[in-house]
Length: 102
Image (cartoon, rainbow, N blue to C red):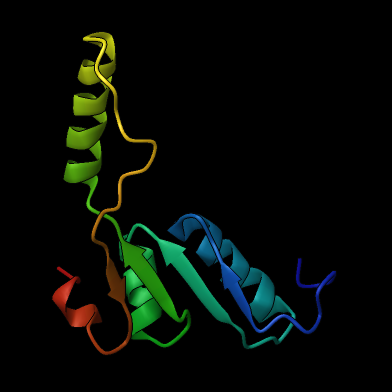
């Protein structure tokens, strides 16, 4: 992607493993771009704290599972379920990463 889009200033990754891969690729090309991942895993939190990636998005796994099971139960019971469910997330940056590191 970095070769195909040399003017890219940011990359949004769908998980932190992808973000760490994007960081490795950018670093190997001496590129400094804003990288965002999702999941707030320990490697990403460390990279955020060190200023290597821009941020990670902390998703609420318990709520995702709970709501998913409830939707499945409702569908099996013949009930209507919404096509979309908006959930709160936390944007973890250098400013608040300490709250998420253990």
